[in-house]
Image (cartoon, rainbow, N blue to C red; front, side, top):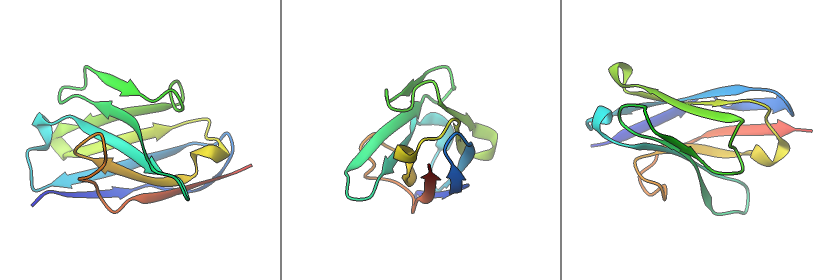
Length: 115
């Protein structure tokens, strides 16, 4: 059974950085596209990034482009999200997911950015 476990969230000031990790198990991680999605309080899930199995293709939402970088280590079954120049509007629960809409995701890790 697929399992995704996110970590690395925390509370930072605007302009700060965090690196999220997601450890996958129960499926062949190395052959799947992987995604990051987030949910801010009172808002719907928002897709923010994706990466192909070989890490040669990445894509980002306009809201994070130029500030966030997604990567993966297939040998460790781990997905990463490097977040730089964080803004208060990045405050959300962050999930890694097996699909773009976030219907197959982990339990999430909270990111809180203060101004």
